[in-house]
Image (tube, rainbow, N blue to C red; front, side, top):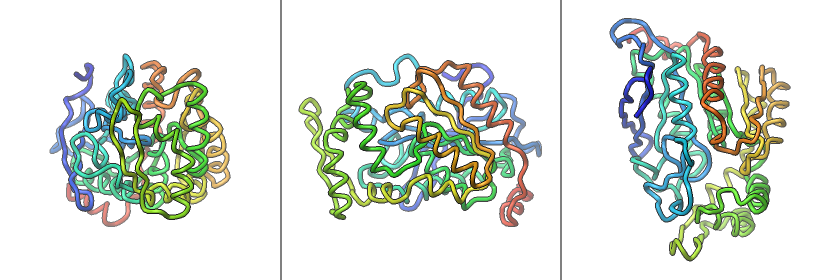
Length: 333
């Protein structure tokens, strides 16, 4: 159930390359009818690393043996669900979707790659541009973890995207993130109750070596309790090794704010500090907000913090000039 002040979500399916992805559009309760001519700002929400559902939580629905051990986002829904609700209460619509092979979406997660996930995010933006109630000139993106790098890639080539919020963002190569994250989780035990996470941490060095040798795949043996093997497409991981967010940040000229949990075991807070510096050097008005004692998914953060993140982004969704093709779409309604 969604809280008061938030409309029931509208299920939406859209084509992304050769598959159909499933998601939902969440509108503010006070949104004007589509035929009223009044349009509202909106935000695309992108999840972090590993198979996750539209709410941003580990996808234990389609992959129960991968995440079926231990608590999953205890006491709170996934980060993207919380943010979607907070945005609706701030008067902003949002769209979030299940990535390939997750939730209700078609596809195969282990065979997917970074560039395909970037294309899928672009297709999600395109699908929403037919919605008459959404203001195409006030479009934003929230990216979490890997979703932050995808958000940067999409925004660089899309002048209609006016503002971004990057949460738990990486700056350096995925190679470095894997190594530092495995060490951090070994110390803290964070997320190691999940078989896929434990297996990735155990075999991270072999994954890196094989990907750099351009081997096609790695068979990841999950812990005995799961009794499953996962075949990873190593080309997908190599793309992440050679597409650091810090390089993308030098090409962006947009409003960007960063949020980072101080106890993040996937992307160290130093990553956002470095990204903040590079974004500012490229002419962006970037600001970093650390969240004390919060991990990668900000599960420890209060609903008040979620509201502040949403209100900050809502305040930065100012009208931007649209390219001719999008202006025509908006005018045609």
